[in-house]
Image (spheres, rainbow, N blue to C red):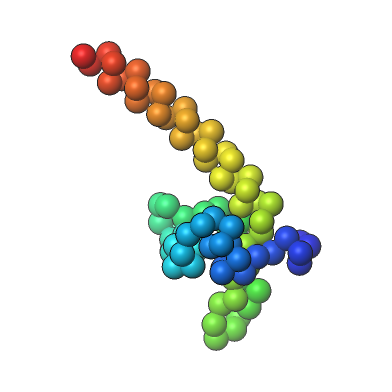
Length: 88
């Protein structure tokens, strides 16, 4: 993985226009195998055996994941509109 495509948590938060806590939460959800996290291909721990984790986010993988999520959300929204229109 190219080092230039790896972002720190702060850089990722700035890219997403959110807090660094939000980015940490997505990683924590993924690490604990809970819903709402990111795929493990999006981030990497540079110190897997260290006392503290040193996470970096792969910019290209994150952008790809967000693009795919956006397309899925669009499909879900249009499906929900069809259901709500049918119920009236």
